[in-house]
Length: 485
Ligand code: HEC
Image (cartoon, rainbow, N blue to C red; front, side):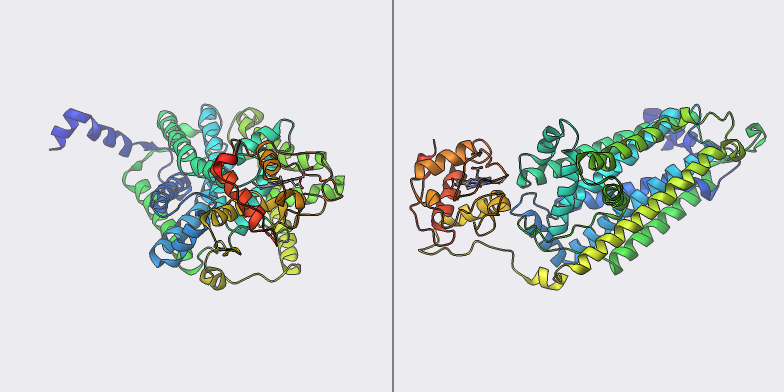
């Protein structure tokens, strides 16, 4: 049987080669981080695929479908595992990288393997970042807004931000961009990079322990000792994730409300240090675009470039610790700074949250029915209800949830005689946007975007019908699709 398979596939000898791989110095628990990371990755892929069965990416359904996932104990557990699995994967990638760094295992001939490894860390972080938005709750929305605004900081960044965001404001397009990155592009990159990482690993073989005379190490075998240690640690990782998922499931906040300016977002723990840096730099350099650019982009970019270049920065000819005191000392300092920045960010965020209004409990949030279109005066037509949805997704962030406007940012639409006046003028403003007009005695900092091409004609007609007939005491006539030109 084995011969039959072997002669047709070569799988048996391939497996034999793999299992009898020499391990310099013998099996060790020091070598388990790579395989444990891969185990966590497989768990993320499996739980992630099943989560797509229940999740619906759009501004009108993302939070609602996540709520449904929370309300069913099985899918809730699945999501909890995915949530803790993400933390485990990031922690393990980081530990794996740290160990390679301390042991100098990135040295020739393993430079490319190291670079692929650092790319894997970045892809993993992007997966964490994009996944964070998907529940579309308050925290998801406002934390992602911070990162999207960072993308807009550098010169030319506005284009990048609008690509990532899918337009001028966050909405369904943003969810779809992040969803596509999270479930398709980044996992594909991850699998391809892991494939390359392992192929290069097979080519170079394990680096083995730090030794003055590597040739004197007596080799051990992958099978069974290392295989057992890898499997044992993966099992341990699995049990820890399951226990955390069971006893400390994630928290679903209220649905994203772009008009809430009080909300204090908290980032995932692995981005806390960047938040801390972002908070700290302006204290020393003042507020302004440059300190922000420095903290959010320049310092992290230089940091990651240095990590990429380590095999060439580290000039020591051997991997011994004594020859590499500088690198190891710097690593220790950098880690201490990252930990300190994380604690600092954690404390500032906690203090702000404590000073803010009390938040709802999760039970209250889950019990509350999702916000639905309130029946408008004079018989709720479909156009009004649809218009309200479009308004809350696209317009309320500037014009306010009830069309009351925001002083200095955007004018009120409720009680605005332009809105209830000639419908042709309103259609023109919606299609082409508006900037630099004095409205109701005020000029405004924001720009009214042009919605032509951003919304369908039907949506534009519905939202005009809603702002003319559903906001405040506005009672003007409805507009139909044929009026939109
Ligand atoms: C990015 C912020 C922003 C968004 C989003 C936005 N608007 Fe505006 N809107 C403005 C600003 C600012 C003005 C005033 C422009 C000026 O004169 O500077 C304005 C003006 C208007 C006016 C004209 C008011 C008048 O008295 O002339 C209408 C009508 C309007 N918006 C409707 C909408 C609708 C409907 C949506 C959603 C489809 C929307 N806006 C989305 C910022 C925004």
